Length: 165
Length: 391
Image 1 (cartoon, rainbow over the protein chains, first blue to last red):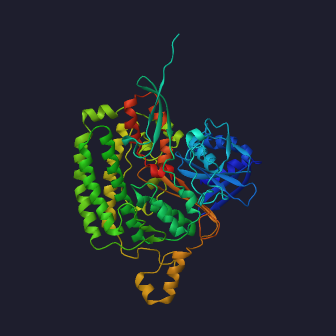
Image 2 (image 1 turned 180 degrees about the horizontal axis):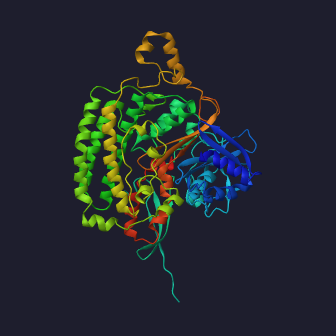
Image 3 (image 1 turned 120 degrees about the vertical axis):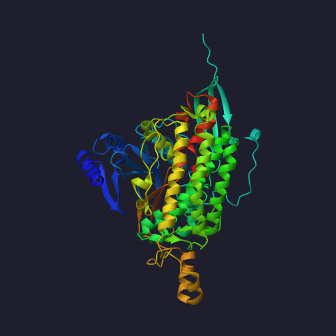
């Protein structure tokens, strides 16, 4: 019940931001305009009829043939009403997205991971650095144009001593 | 003029108490931690990327290598996601066996946790007792799955095979014996004055902080928040079983210990019920011939079955376009798989929601302002597995 409520309430409050509401296998996904993401997320968290207080997951997806190219999917859970909601938004290549890490601190590391593996910039993130890969890594591996075996597969191993750099 | 003299020390990545390759940069003011920064990624194998070039049945083997202390739970979470995508029904017998195995695996993971956590804090004795029972569980699981560490036994559509006849008697014997063993562990630690001094009021997290940090699993429940995926979104027939969700109140290291000890008893109850109520029937979905490979006897007899077997093994199957999220309560917290299918035989995107990764993000919050000697207790209390954090 509360699931449909989120869609209706969002449509009511942000009629221009809601792009699409889909239902697949009893899961609701709402696509939101990227510019409105902070307003919508704050609303979802603080509205007492919704109370999505737990950010469960934040995933990046690369649709290399679509425009805009990237999608970010936020998965929210309400500990009060016990239901889940997925919010999606799209980001074009080279564009950036506002951070939600001040709304949920949980987003801090998740956004760093998306930045690391997809190269999507989150505005106003407190510490946007690579998290899984080393600082000097070149490229963003979860992009579809990044080869699975790595760009240097088959090349002779480059040995570079510290003092030669 | 007062001069601040902070000292930065590096803990790990090769450190016996970080349970894997976790590196911590600690900034100290004397013995007090001012700032802590975890560095991870030493074990990154790109599992999410690799899965995009594998068929759905092949990608299952990658999930064993996430949280390697509870591989069957990872198998289960992945299979639930793919089955949700395919929208197939799993027979009751397979569901019960999955629950039975996942709960045995949870007990084994918690035993490993309590043994190493106590070892970190200087209580060495428990290790020998806990590993004895863990060994019994691993032998039971090996009997059915053929492997101790990487079983890949829970398959899309059901199980890899039915259980052998000797399996259930051994499970029942273990279940009868185990509560007495937990009593033994608790005699060693629960009222032990040294243990209590090392764990009470150490690295506390309030309920609000836990939710804000996205923490799940025993750490969240030790702070008094009743969120357990098995109750909140029952999967694999968990609604058929009678069990409680142990909760703590202070959210410190001691409460996390108590919650996990109680969870082992509850898991034992679930295993007992599953073993007693185990229905007869097929061990894999019968109405999904394009997903579940035919039985071995059939392959030897029928050429069509042989072709079907080859097709599933080599090409896999093509789920409909769409996206699903399925999650389970693993021993560390909510383990979720977010799958996007583009209608081909390989996942377009497989996002793993790793509980350890998100729980570890709360570590700096837990230890800042605490003593440096308590870092080990705090890391142990989150129960991290680096295979899952780094993926």
